[in-house]
Image 1 (cartoon, one colour):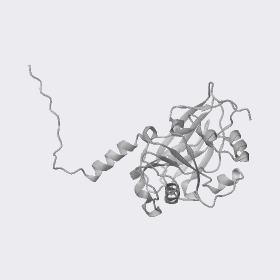
Image 2 (cartoon, helix red, strand yellow; image 1 turned 30 degrees about the horizontal axis):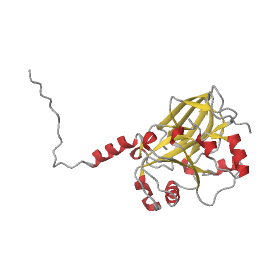
Image 3 (tube, one colour; image 1 turned 135 degrees about the vertical axis):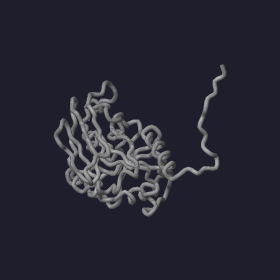
Image 4 (tube, one colour; image 1 turned 60 degrees about the horizontal axis):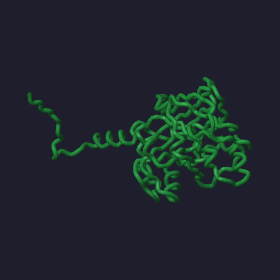
Length: 253
């Protein structure tokens, strides 16, 4: 018996709609944590966070890089390396949708494909040592599992990225509760500044800084974090368990 398979074929003369293109882009960018090449993290972008760590406010955006191998998704485990005091820093992430350099503030929005909720885990006791020595922060920020990241949030789901609520809890107790309206440098300026130094590529993540309330995590903790719009409706949430890292680097101070 002959079996014939029927395969639907799009009319070659038809033109994809704007909705088709948006849906394709959103599906493609949902895998940014696997396909992106770098994480660009902005430091000292909230005045109260600068104050709580006794840092100096920057005159222009200040950033560092994190490896994409530091990503861990909701439901995963954050590992505490041996001898390390780890602090949480909840942040809004901006997902870059196309490559560009020397991007102007006026064009910046066209390079954004969407957003994500992230946590920039930081080896705080190590950071204090390397800051005094004038050394880079790669180790401090780059351990495996040091960038918990949410699902992709399409740009169309966010009316105003500077009117979002960020929160983080440890074992149900609120530790960070801020709003992106408090950013010192806004997203278009961040994109302009970073792209004037290095090319931003499709799938890259730009972490935009953390509000006040950063603090330590400990083995056995349950971390929950969330991002919501000005209407209070949730856009993304994270749930993570904290464990000791078996083996690996041991910080002795």
